[in-house]
Length: 381
Image (cartoon, rainbow, N blue to C red; front, side, top):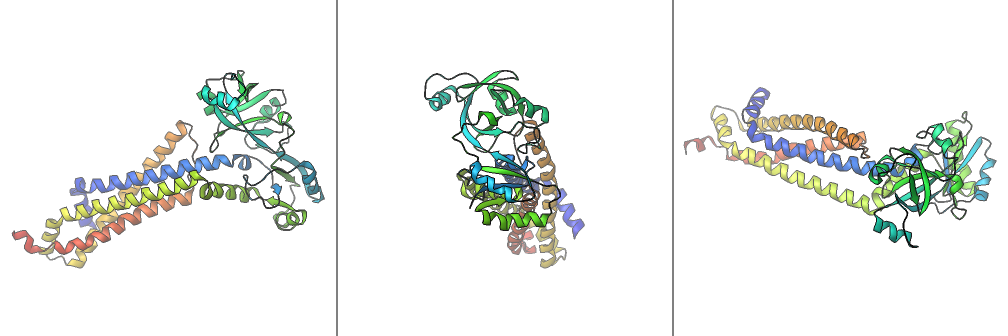
């Protein structure tokens, strides 16, 4: 039966090619949506994932980067009761407007929108050599350059779109700064990110979190004890970086407007793909009724004929998934070339492949009901 299914699919490949095309296009659309959305959400937690702090500390009840309303140094000083603590480093952010030219007028926001500049998230960086924030992403020599007054680091994408080069002046809230470096991966969800020295941090902006560096010999059990017991005792929220990152991404996905739009659009795309695949598979079966009737006339029973059609659907699924895998790699290469942030989690990738395969096989099963029309007597009409 398998050889017959393979032969019929190859012989009638023009009939079955539209099914494979619909499956591949639908799968690529879903993968692209997931990759781009996850890339945006992943960039939002880049300060966590690109730092080497062992713990992040915020006010009591803070579970994501968006929850903290500020934690002053006197509140964070109680952390020194932890014997293993070696370093404390503030994490403070603010919002501003970045432009390639100075803006005229007192209303910076209005002037920047008129001038085509962009809103940015400002992250204040400790320029000392052993600083933890962005330690995995910022070379030591670049961090040392931030000790200079009025310097700034922006994303590669922003530098290209603004037409600025290293050494040029850019204006952050109408304050002139010298561009000392550009870095990839600073295109955060909702706004770009710029890095400036902690020395430029206004006093009215308290840290939203504190990064904690522990003794390297601290055991995982001891870290868990600090998170679950010491934190509540001190009236603080002490979080592992992975937990803070996952909670922040979940908040963006399930609570932000963009996250809901992504989920609704992905669900709608999947439903439309399922409907189209079902209809195309049904049309292919109906178009092959005379061939199926001939097979029944040659002695192939109805049950075996159903199995033949199911095998045909399985072969189409295999070819479609293989083509989708190859084209997915090409899509990711294109995103890399265009410097577009993306992230494609393996579990979600497998889920898309399995879901698309299941839709095709289910559509094949639903199309089997039309085989009742493949009566050998119909060949005499």
